[in-house]
Length: 188
Ligand SMILES: [Zn+2]
Ligand SMILES: [Zn+2]
Image 1 (cartoon, rainbow, N blue to C red):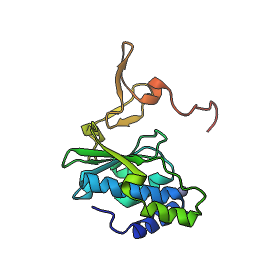
Image 2: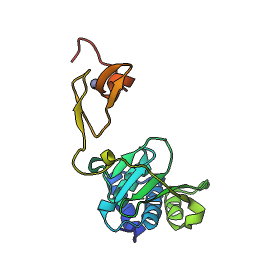
Image 3: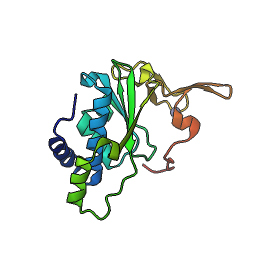
Image 4: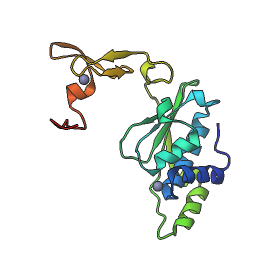
């Protein structure tokens, strides 16, 4: 798996993402480098962790063929412009981020071209890393499905918490640690 034609891949990213932005060019470059380093032989060997849910995330998704719903793409929302490429077959992982660089007052079109043309060393930073992937994190049939004793909803993939303060679970994360939403009483 490789990004051989950056222009062709960039166009597919723009089509998917809905507009051209520098994030698309940057995402293509990050993905290209990540695929070169991790060198997965097939899609099945690749898991990508993307560190924000902004423009580059769409470009990384398209350029690598990974998908959130296939568990091959993971969002770890650090709000950072970086992604890690894991080759499961080789047990090797590389994190690719950006160098501080300045596109000055380049127009969108110039900036797009410059990002595509820059040398890896000028645009990107990368390092070998280790990612501890649990069996429950991998694609394939769910290893574990339980029902939260508090809300009754199903919890997949070992995201449940066994017990808490002497109370026996399993509990879901939202019941135990609070959710990102508040329930509205008397409303549907
Ligand atoms: Zn964008
Ligand atoms: Zn619950």
